[in-house]
Structure formats: structure tokens, C-alpha cells
Image 1 (spheres, rainbow, N blue to C red):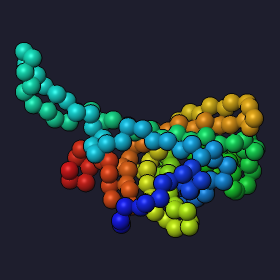
Image 2: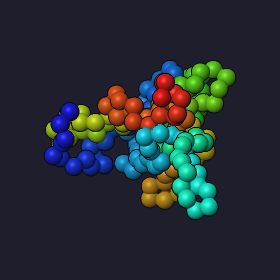
Image 3: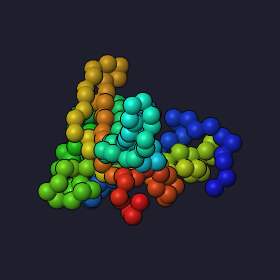
Length: 173
């Protein structure tokens, strides 16, 4: 894909949340999706030195990138789909019987798909976060009231189908 000449704006983004059962296209997000801690490897670099001299570098403990988004509160929860973003990322409300991306008996996780479009609506890039754990969230009363939803990425991250962030040892690397 050639480099786009159009900047990507919040109004050009579409977020879908997928678990093992359902898909929710976000309609109440604030347009503030953010990811931090991405890198070619999801392991922290370890630098070894002796008496002030560099001896070598390798990869150590696993790092967990984060994602966050916020949702305008139209309803705290719903009894039928589509539910709120909060319902989907926590496996509650209409998604209470759904299975997360890690399967039954594991921590409930979802996948996040962020699609950037150009000004004509054509897809330009798709950033996909596998196995995101939204373990906690915040509520803030305001104009409008919002849920803030931070999550940790436990799986790989892909851009347009190509893995851009992976743990050492995963997939033969």
C-alpha cells in the first residue's frame, strides 16, 4: 500500500470490539483511542555492562502495551445487544454469556480493531490488537458523563495484517 497523502483524523477512525462470540462497532466512543508501548518486540531490552563498558544486549521480561478509549454514557448498561462499550469490554450486560478471546476459564479479553479511513471513507489502515484485558474502568460525571476504559494488550499487534509487535519466542522469532 502506498503512503497516503491524507492525514488521519479522529472523525476518520472506526473502532470494532470483538470477543469470541460478538462484534460491537463503537458508536459512542469519544474519538480518543490511544495505544502506548508498541515496539518491534514486546520484550524489554536488557543491556549488560561491566565496569562502565557495554558487554551486550538481549531481550528480557515481557512488556504489555496499553490501549485506552472513553465512551459517552448514554446508558450505563443494556439488557440486549448492542450494549455499551463498557458492557462489551467487561463481558457484562448483553455480552454476559459471551466467551472472551482467550476462551472459557481464562481472563476475559477482547480484540480491538481500529480502522483509519480517508476522507472518501475508503479503508487506509487497520491496526489490530489481540487479547486486550480491560480489567478496570473509570466513571466520570460531566457534560457528557464518560467511562474511561484502559486495557493491557496480552497478544500480538498487527497493522494491515502484518505483525508489528510480538513477544520473543512467539511464532518462531
